[in-house]
Amino acid sequence: MKITENYIGKSGVEYVFEYEDADSFDHLEYEKCQQTYGVCFCEDKMVIQLNGKTDLWGLVGGTVEPGEKLEETLKREIQEESNMKVLSCLPIGTFCPFISKVLFFWSKYVFLLSSSSLKKLF
Image (cartoon, rainbow, N blue to C red; front, side, top):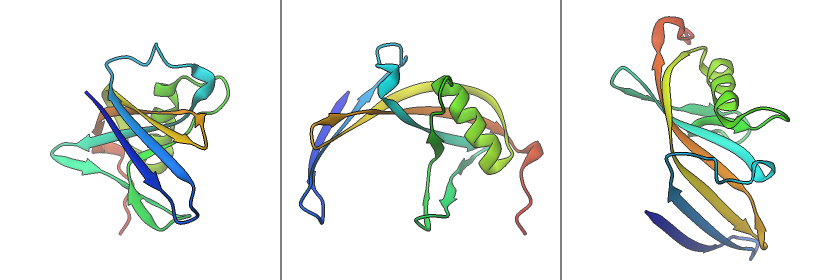
């Protein structure tokens, strides 16, 4: 399935967002893969994180570091942000924002996590 949506931002910049289902990310140009995010579950709960810069809740993920594979990036981000262990994962799709004719990719995974190392927040 492929979903495309046009959007004009507050500053007047035109965006084209494109999502496509994927069971592999082998077709992506690695140098254009900037971000990766996971739809994470622990038991019957979805795991989300609070972004300290924007003060918004969202999917766990972050920036791909040089030499890192997409899955490695997300496993690192999950460990850093939630201190949870990844039990299994699989790719589910790509998100492609076209901003001012510049193309880059954000990969999306689904993860099953273990709560045995869950950070105690309270």
